[in-house]
Image (cartoon, rainbow over all chains, first blue to last red; front, side):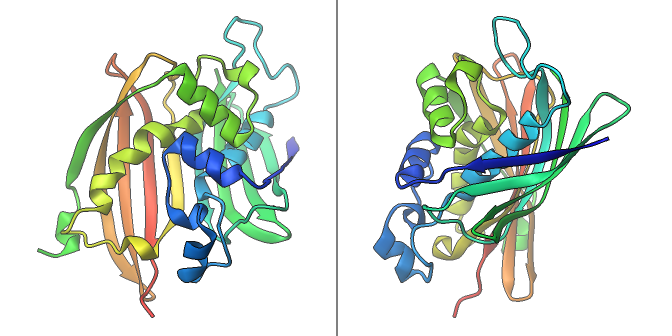
Length: 136
Length: 135
C-alpha cells in the first residue's frame, strides 16, 4: 500500500548563510545578491543539497505506520536511509516554503521505496527523487 | 591530455573528524530535530565530510572546470549501514567517474567513497556537475 509524503519546510532569510556555515559551501551564488545577479541568476539561490536534505528528511519520515523512533538511547529513526538520488532542476530562493511531495511503498524485503519531488511556488527544484529506507 | 583522459583519477583521501558542534550546526541548518540526532550525524551530513574531497577535482587544471558556470545537476548517495557519530574520523577518496558533453553542456561526474576509522564504508556518492555553455 502506498503512503503519501508531504513536508513543507520554511526557507526564510538566513537559510543559505546557516547552510553555508554548516556545510562549508560558501559559493557566493548562495550568499551574495550582487554576485548572483552578475552571473545571470535571479538572486541568491538555495543550495541544491539543502533542498536534497529536505527530500531525505521527508523520505525518512515516510517510514510505515508505527513508531518512527526506537526507544533506545540513541533516539534515531527506526528506519534509516539506505539510498537517495535526486536531479536538480529549478533554482530555489529564500522566501516561500519548499514543499517535498511523493509516495512511499513498503517492499516485501522490509525496505521502503519512495519517489519524491521538491517544489517552491509551483516551480520544480528537484525531480526524479528516489529513496530507499531499511530497518535500522 | 584531454579532460576525458582524467577519468579514473583519484583525489585524496580527505580526512574529516566529526564533532558534535558540526552535527548540531548541520542539523540546525537543515531544520532537523536536534533531540532526534544528538551524537549521530543525519545521513545527508555526508556532504559535510565528503564534499570537500571534490575540491581538488574542481581545481584540477587537466579537467579545466569553469567554476563560475558550474551547477549541481544530480546527487546520489548510498549508505551501507554504519552510522557516523561525533568522534569518528571519516576519510573520503574522490574519483573522476565520467566526463562528457551533451547539448552544449559539459558533464563532470565524480564518485566518492567515505570510510570511518574502523575501515567501514559509511557512504558512497555520485556527484553530477554541469558546466553551462559559455554565452
